[in-house]
Image 1 (cartoon, rainbow, N blue to C red):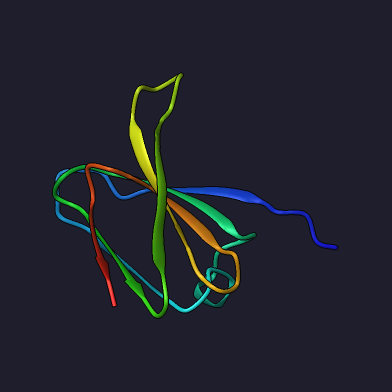
Image 2 (spheres, rainbow, N blue to C red):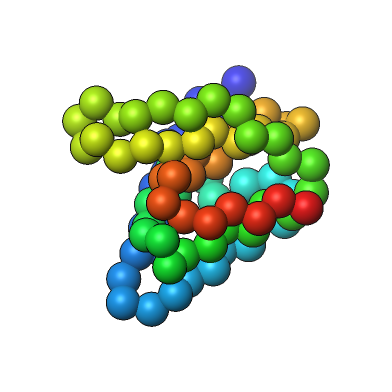
Length: 88
């Protein structure tokens, strides 16, 4: 089978940024089924389709908190907790 490729995206910066994921990650141009999304409280991630929020954890190295989301394709966007997340 195909090995997962870990990919990261940083939305942080001076301006507000919004990332919309409609469907699975591959259909949105991302490699693999895991995507780390970093940013700040000005940024938003819109997960369109059937997503569920799973576990949350704190990264031991950075100290940042993340929430893991999943869909029926077993995609896992792992989103820094400071970002706003809209599902639907």
